[in-house]
Image (cartoon, rainbow, N blue to C red):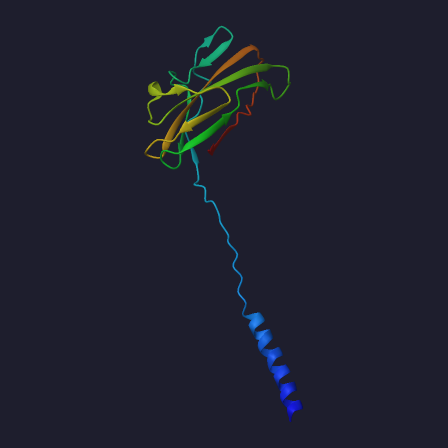
Length: 165
């Protein structure tokens, strides 16, 4: 009988031991950073057809020209973003590859949709604050040297990147 009690005690210990092992709990801490979305809306394309040719240059001033492109960035109010954009590029005529247009881009920004109140951004990369309404406006200007251009198609690879900082 003692033998049965010992065997039974060993079996019960093994059963309850495995049950308690299955009931162990583990705690794993997980954290995530949720970043708000930024949205870019094109308000107006950069117009290179209508500006008057000034010698061999087409000049669109982002601060004063009605031909400047305009974008609106929507995001979290009063947050800062970094804007990075193409400064200059050579546009090669797409059919013959003979003509070349040299482009130099510039941008201005303001928290309100008032181009004359905008200020010139440093070329390439700039830190900008989103306004209290969650908007910031950007105007794109350019200077195109067409002295080496031939008749044809020219495609730009202008890149505008932006992110929260």
